[in-house]
Length: 192
Image (cartoon, rainbow, N blue to C red; front, side):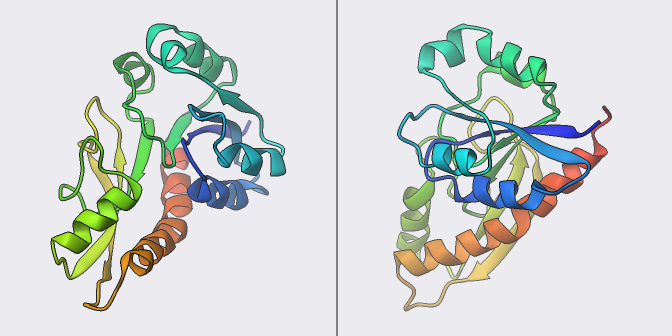
């Protein structure tokens, strides 16, 4: 029986796409569901392109009902992967999936993490701090933004002429290269 992943995303979903591509023909792992809090998120189109079911939810459903947990359990989801998901994960969901929720952050944590630090906000902060390196952190999710145990970090060099788009591009290259591989390593360790 295949191990099953649920992807949570709020926006475009380029990392979700890389995960979908990576596991498309896997005999051991499948993407069971894509969930989003944004009805206009492009990740919904990406899920549709791969014939992966999706679910749109609002704040009330996510924080004040058990519907999402019930949905994940019914689909026998083994691992939750956050791919540009902007809301804090509720304690109830963390307790239901201990050590089985992971996230990718576009900086070398603990720098440039926390509430409001996502996407271009992170890249701008990195630029304004005149950092010579940027990077990514893949980590387990706990009850605080970007504070879970680190799983993997990778760095890239920032040249003094690099603009926001170039920094973002370098970061996304690392995300797309490493996230599917790290997710696969983690899910293979989970006992069915």
